[in-house]
Length: 278
Image 1: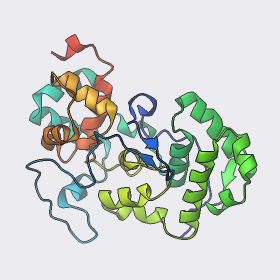
Image 2 (image 1 turned 180 degrees about the vertical axis):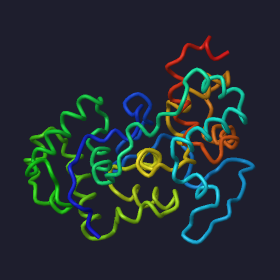
Image 3 (image 1 turned 120 degrees about the vertical axis):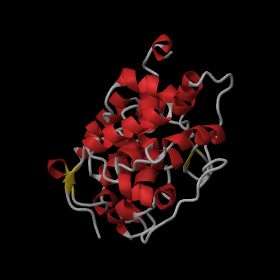
Image 4 (image 1 turned 135 degrees about the vertical axis):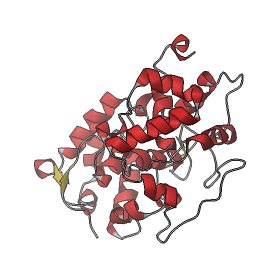
């Protein structure tokens, strides 16, 4: 099933994208990789509970919190404050969770925006994305196949590097031939979404995790390889050494099934003075 026509807008996968994204780097095969401190797919850390899956692959906990409403975010905030006194100090200072402020339902624009924005400031990414959209009549794109109709020269002219042009080609080809079906992502378990997205050139695990959190609104994602998460946990929990993924995932067990919300608060905590968190 092809995505319906829609107007593309600059897609910031995370409100803290430019400051806190992990150091995914391009390797010789053209795919972005997560940093070495990131966890391996499926790793939940020591003592992680085995989660029962229902038909369709979603766990009971995922189903309970899958559609987070404003009331759901408040429920998550209260639960996190109850379970983790250290995180609670930051939550008290930050206030209500605003993860939903920039949520959009346009999966295609989010994925294209993720490619465009790699290694760029938010302002530069928005400028290039605007030029990209202007290549299509009335700023609309019919479907991913329309990208195939653009020449490499046209894509380079809007400010895309040759590598990013290759990423766009691979993304559009996978959508066009059905290897990546955007309409099925909403129903897939988190790890299956990650598996499909990281098969696309230029997409590492961190990018897929941001898509889960800010596009599919999944409540229980903890990007253990995100440098902002690493720094926030070291700061809040007064750790002498930078925590590795296993340590982060172990600390995060208390935040289930709202680790996405906890992650948002961790990012926001970096804006606070240390003295206000004691």
